[in-house]
Image (tube, rainbow, N blue to C red; front, side):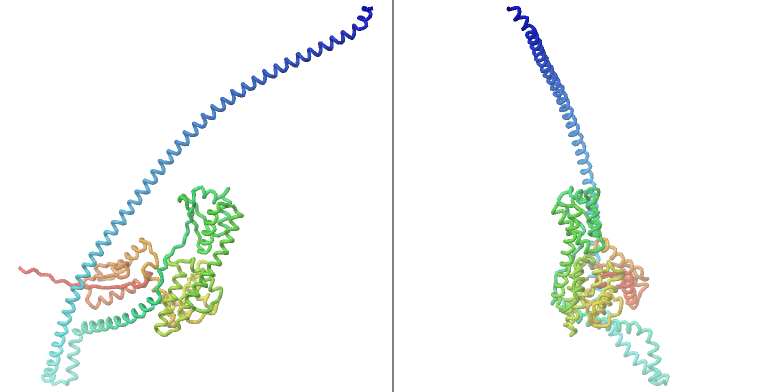
Length: 528
């Protein structure tokens, strides 16, 4: 029975053993695979650790090399900067030494001129004494002439008229110098009287209008907070600087100047718009073509508003009455124009006020005089845009807006291009010269100043008979010493006039230049 059962179950048992064996094989295989996988992971991790360690070592090495190279480069740059600073300091010291030497030379020349002036004053007093003696001698000569006239009538039997003719012919040559001296003295007296009255009128006008001296220069440099701002202004591939220049019409120069850029342009209004725009962009920090266009448009509107406000303020200050709106804008535009460093708008206002006071003193129309003074330089507002001198442009503008005849005449003649046709035109020219020639009103470089003095002395020395020439009082006077052997007293007057005409023809200068010609004769002997 058991065998039957066993035989009946035998296939089942074998199948169970086979299944069990397969399961145990699968389990053992899975365990072996897990062990192999763990070993592979362990090996991979160790390899990764080795690679990471090697990379860290390489990175440390590269870092150290980079630091050493940076330190070496910084050291080299520092050495170059110190060398550059040293060279610049040496140049500055050299320039200072040259200026000090020139100042010493000018001081010595000034002291020499002071001594010469004292000597000339002494000689003038002696000349006055000599003149008195000559007058006494002249009286004696006249008495002798009368006596000779009487004797000639008695001896020759001539009439009184014939005798007078002969005597006059004989003494004509001797009296020529005395006649010339008398004419010169009377001419000097007349000039002194006229000059005194003119000074009184001008002094009164200046006293009634005394403003600050207008001295300004056009700003073309914009400061930057940091040097890195230059790169942001240039932009990627230069797109920011191209957009800025195309929108403003001004060249933006970025050079080695530390923390600064330069604006270059012939139009002062465009330059002002560019300056304001760049300052806003630098302060804001957002610099890209869209932002640049927005800021430039806003600054252009602000400058236009500023010009109109300045023009209205100038018209109100001078009290010239109603004026065309376009002229008001042009007057305000003068604020961005300079002439020898002098702000043209302030100069025009000052000229208008002085001209008005002068007109009031002599009984002319004060309001019309102020109007002509304010508009006399109106051509300078657009002389960089329109071809021609500012005088011709100003005349065209005044005629276009139907200004009075006196105003047009004043604009045309204030630089003596044409002869003035009205008293107001003469007053405008005088007021213009006063405003320009006031001390400090206009700037001048040391090179131009020195060149003007040298030209004055050179012009004087080019005249025949001139021995020495000295330009003094900052070029407002030139003193000329002539050779007494070649030039007599009458020729000194001719030489002074020749030098004056040469200066007027060859030099341009504010105010006036006084020419003084000196002739000195010395006689020396030794008592033994």
